Length: 234
Image (tube, rainbow, N blue to C red; front, side, top):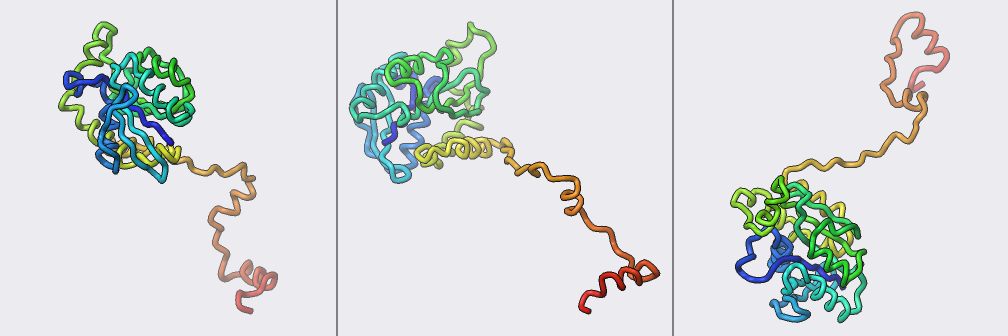
């Protein structure tokens, strides 16, 4: 079983906040796939479903961001899950708006929701960070994070959430790099494919692969080559 936890603050007042992008992501997955109606349990809103043949629990903690770990930790203990069975989705100030990163473990980066998850759930869970950009100076961070997304943000916000929802099964299959590639492409970025390297071919081997020079068809050299190798078809 996999828990996908979106982090945010409960209530209509916070619904459009940048800090609530985790809630938005989980809502997008919920809409795109067959999940049960939302219910209240573990100090959270939860919904059960199946992705890629595995049971998945969507969870939106209702404890407010700073206590997110209380809700997620309770769910993990109930289902006897390990940190590796958790994916947390949340906002990241230190990533440009629209960029996404997915990795296992790491630091909290000053994010209070992640501090709480680390304390209640362990640290080796997968973290899907979605960039909301930095306002530039520390004094503006609070209003930026708890401010609503601007209309201009829909240029990247909607395609990112749609792509994540469309490919949510990749989270279950641990296809993290493939999922990040799809999000990058959906937002108009370029994904550099790894091309196989020549594996240290010798100069002779490389020379053989180059186009061969044309052999003379007539003249003394042609006659000599004909005597040495014969004509094709002889």
